[in-house]
Image (tube, rainbow, N blue to C red):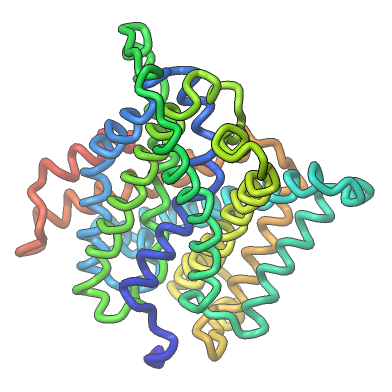
Length: 387
């Protein structure tokens, strides 16, 4: 049983979700959305949120019913069968591990570009250094709900607050000249916006650690999702209003916005640009520390060998054996490829398999569990979304 000091408060649970959901994608997507949909970019986040809302309601309601470690594995096993539980748990674990590896590599690439002396080291070696660092801070006693969550969230909020503040100051409504062709391109950005709006389900992996989890976990998921969707939509709207079509050429828009708003203090823009990549490291931290519980659950349910090693907990309630194995698998994935598109495809496909099975589980639960809290048409819509 977890001690109270190792439990996660609902507030920290929300921070873990936000830390996972907001990575570099929010900042990098600004250019892509502007290229494809012009001023309609911010609408993509709103539409994508509505599309995946049935899936979120399905997962969060299942999490309330099963506030235990392993999340998606337990949902599928309990309401479909052992095979579905294994497929869901293993698929989700691999998908999140690939996503964490990709984020780490992006973090390394940025700092190699900023500091030339790092170019003497192969990127893979630096990837492994960051990976060892993330694992080591847990071995040294960091907790998933500890101060690091606050630090990482604070670092990623700095550039967001900067954009909200100076974006509104320099906002030019004339940039919002809506065209029918831009609206027709809106559908092209939905997959991008959906990908940037997922990650909420990571908290299901550590549902047992949330204080009064049966009461709070659904609130945590819905609150975090609502906050992130609002941030994403406002960020895109404000950035386009401040820079117009120039956003499409900006890559990450922090620096050009700083050059426009405070031209004599370019160093501020560069510092904030760097904090964007600190956001990546924060997302990696949340992914690896929550995702290892999926491996823990698979071992605990006798799906994997070396059960004793994989289920051993540290005094901070971290399954260190599972965390080390997760790091080893991430190292193998990065050794095979560090190219963004293949890694992203693996991450998206694997997570969609798990989410689809969770939606099916919610459908069966709505039929068989009294007072489940959802009508059957909600998970049906969730199945359509995941498919």
